[in-house]
Amino acid sequence: MKNIFEYIFSKSSLYLFLVGLTLAIILTASFYYLLWNHPGILVDTKSETGGVFENTTLLGKFYLISGIFPNFLFLIIIYRFIKYIVLTIFELLEGFFKILGSILESIIGLIFSKENFDKLENWRQMSKPKVEKKVKKAIKKINFKKSEKNVFWLAPIIALGIGILPLPIGYYMLSRLIVSGCALYFAHKFYKKNTSTKLWIFGFFVILYNPIAPIYLYEKGIWILINIPTIYYFYINRRYV
Image (cartoon, rainbow, N blue to C red; front, side, top):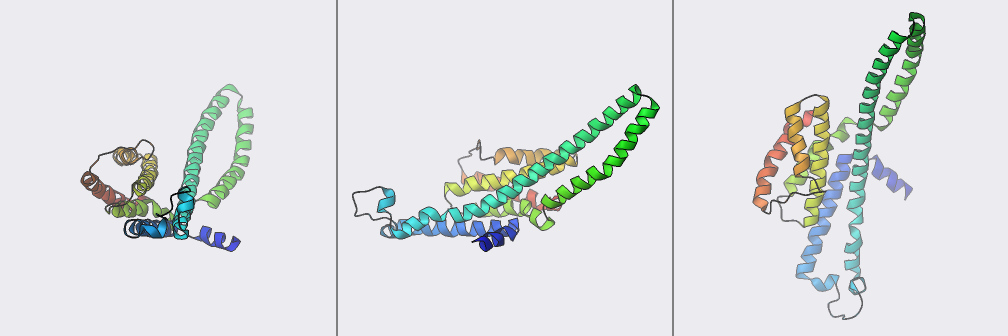
């Protein structure tokens, strides 16, 4: 079991996403096919006693618990994404404290004598290499590889492309999570680059596709018309991952 988990966690986020998505589609499609065409295979329709789980056949019970497999793979990707967001927040805080430190140094330099200020500056110069070394070491441990970052533009394109098909509502909630999360990643990238136009566009995608307070347009055709430029915009900005 340990070797299995080590193998799973050694794979890139893109690989885990594609495997999880494939499993979800296969399980969902096969479940609804059997439910509509051969319901007796999944549920004992002749039984009048017992609950849903008791009346479910062995194959039906398999489908009830099978969703844990693709969800586990998606949870690994979400964990890595959250880890990257946390790292980014730490980088922003680091920059903020550097600016704050520079301001405080200037104030201290005005208040204290030149001798004391020189001592403080020498101490800062001596401590700076140690601090920077520790920060770089921490970033190196948890930073994403370039190949893994490709999931932030590939995942929404694949999710929106598959969303054209008639799928259960659960898939569209998952696609909202994927698209809004990846749009948030790009919005942060353009915020750091001070590119206001693209920042606002991806910020709009975050709001439009958010799964917490979903926006409903009630027409699949309208969503397809919106998804096409969304796919295009993720694709043309892929070099910023």
